[in-house]
Amino acid sequence: MGRASSVAVDRTLAALADPHRRRVVDLLAQRPRAAGELARELAISPPAMSRHLKTLRISGLVEESHPEFDARVRIYALRPEPMVHLLRWLEESERLWSAQLLAFKAHIETAAQTGPDA
Image (cartoon, rainbow, N blue to C red):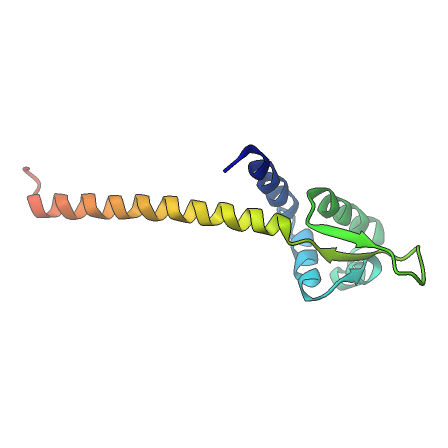
């Protein structure tokens, strides 16, 4: 994995480390929502939600927009790119561990066939 992808994965994982932010991502996966709606859904204060949304914005996981009818309202939506980087990293990790486990299994099977004194 390249340096840029590694940094993106680090940023994504850091943002998702908080359970409130993971819940925001779950809610936004259903549809875009206003900040106030997210705060009500999670039963946290608007200032706390603002801090969580700022972290998610900086990480690149969400983007905000303003509806034409009211520029004071902020609508948040998920951005797919950070999750794509995370998914690629997970796939690479899975391939590595699968190869390691297969090699370990082969080693154990060979040792069992040759006996303890071989």
